[in-house]
Length: 146
Image (cartoon, rainbow, N blue to C red; front, side, top):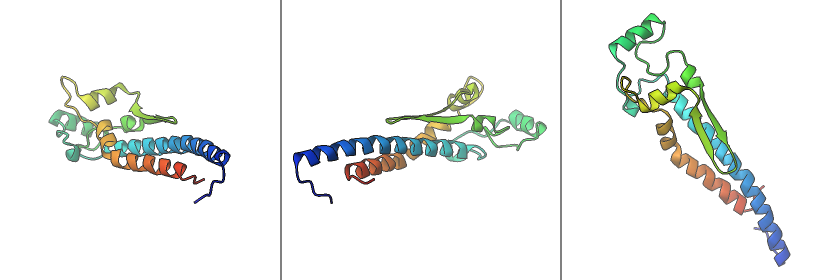
């Protein structure tokens, strides 16, 4: 532990910790965003039973086969939806999503498509690791680690 000999030393330590906090939290946000993206992408290619997704309709399975895709693999037909998942992060937050309208249809469902959420469950399942990542960043910054 570092010994502080004056109020000036204490002020400088606080200033340094504040700078480290910003850098470490930004890195934690980026790391957490990437973890959520990876978790969401991992659902593609599964049957979705672990997330409670309904099985594909017979018509959709037949369409997959006609187009050269696996029969009962929801969301993965071409891989375009999976590949559209991106993130943005800053010093205080992150966002994970897709600019594909199909992502909205799949995540929330429509009148003819049952919901097959992949973004919300990915975030939900990563909350413990996000809290740990951010907590460690704060701890290291407050402890003055470089």
